[in-house]
Image (tube, rainbow, N blue to C red; front, top):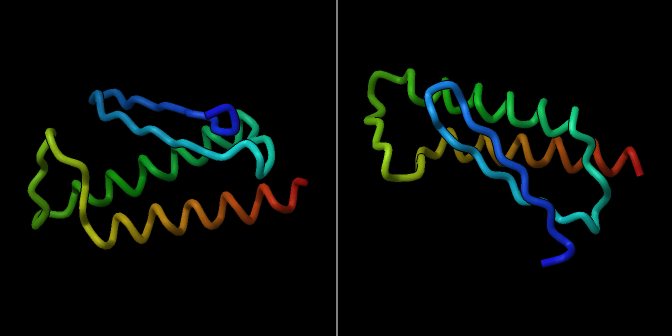
Length: 85
């Protein structure tokens, strides 16, 4: 557990995002985490604005499009942190 860092973000509408990263890959600056959370929030807003998506506050978002967006955010963050090392 010592090689993990946990970050949290809460929106004005009380939606919570939690990101767990391995610190063995390198240090992530707070400014980078803020940008990552803004991008995650934007992907979430795009998902819930879809008129065909039923919002359920008790369940995680399981949309394939949202999962792809989160995967892309993670890949971009990994490639960016690899360049900083």
